[in-house]
Image (cartoon, rainbow, N blue to C red; front, top):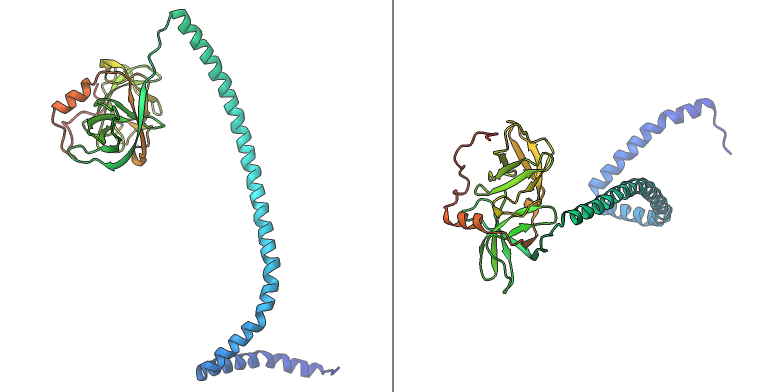
Length: 297
């Protein structure tokens, strides 16, 4: 073993960095001068290192898979805790719902309540935005012998969508609750006060004509009213939301922006509102109706 003096080791240490820099420049010049040779050297070096890379890739992948599995297990633990809490809450609500249902049945029996007959319905797929003279309407694809009539009610899995205004051999048009021509009698669920829901051609319809001394509350649920036999009672419509100007609007419960399947119900109500809408010319698309003072009642 060669022993170097302290002075030689210090000199060698001082020369290491300049020699590496010179070697780097030499390799760069060689690559520029003879690209074929440089490419062959790179390929030979890559071929020599491939077995090393392959040997290192296996343990690295196993470590990464183990880390991913641990992260998934931790996330699953948190998800299980959340599901247990949710399941407990659902069990409590189930107990409350069963108690309320039993009480409701006893009250109906004592009042000799005559229930409404079950409503028939058909399911149709939304195929297009109907457009035309209405600003907010959709076109449904229906098969022959469907039995759909004008004035029937359209709902999705969450709430009221609108009502049928036109029926063809294989298509039907539904006027949405957000259209400017839509007028729906509704009821505030908490106060049981009646009001009128009018469309605005925007994303939210507005509330008008609620009783004196009653103010719609933020987040209050809105359901349909059976006044004038235009709609069945207690269909979910949405929740109250106050806009910047203090006007009570309704956030629709139905997914009006992403309608795919719609159920058309025949509740047996009169189609007076539909006939009146057909006789009166609708507001042109995009034009506002006659000015209405916000909060007028």
